[in-house]
Image (tube, rainbow, N blue to C red; front, side, top):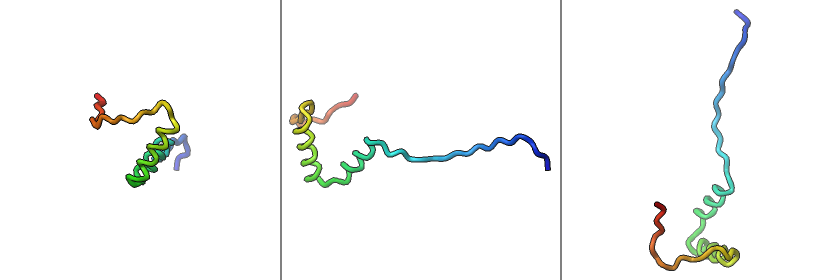
Length: 61
């Protein structure tokens, strides 16, 4: 058996749970009542947020 230079290549996969992903998971687990209360609380605590009462969906084009 010959002894010589050797190169190994390994591949791994992992999931990084970012703060945005943590928030999304938390929001998706809420009931509609909990979600409404959370949104109301966020609107109250952040003066830069505003509720859209038009009822028309946003276009993100």
